[in-house]
Image (cartoon, rainbow, N blue to C red):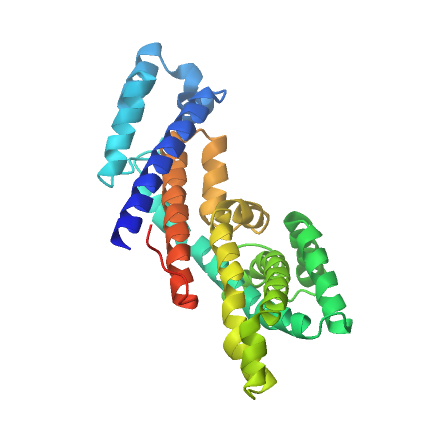
Length: 311
């Protein structure tokens, strides 16, 4: 187990380094100059010497390899640097300010999706080829096919403009979380329901289920005590996989609902060429994905005792 974790961490470190390097290169290839974005319209009154001084202040006068090594060294020590656009504001503070919003959105939506999809998936598997099964399939297809941005706009029109029940944007109260969480949960619920249904159907066909039934256990005991536990393995895989798309799912939702989360911070920083913020966010998310994948493998052994990690 210890050797397996060490090897996975080593591979994860290589992945993080390659991602950070690719991000650095892509940002430098983007058109525009962060110095001119920083100066804005006032740049016409700034001399060339002053512009050069600004470049020196942010290390933009150095070669690309030097810039990367300096930034990577700071990241290794936990120093994310300062924002170029929001002068003097530490990137770490910006991330810590935005992270709770994104974290709450994803935790609430994940819990809501699991609370609805797991029972529905099990029910659809047990009632296979019935109205319940067909209804769950329709719900799953519609949930996967519905774009987040369209659903977000429709909810705003219905519950904010027409009914006036919920705020259309911002987080002035807890009610600001309701529509974004619903939007994120619907897509996840659709995927989780399909996965849970398929895995439960496969589990119900296994010999150990027939053996448990032959021993006289009740139908509910067989399903919940034997089939469902093994059916959770594919669901755990999907949950771990979804973490890799944590940012992409929240960018649209946070932008439409004007939520000050990681997704909106990421897009704003890209448009304003705030190199330090974008690079730091990408590395943080890469670390999160690597950790989530490792945790997923370890959870396998907890859910199914037959699995032993020995690599």
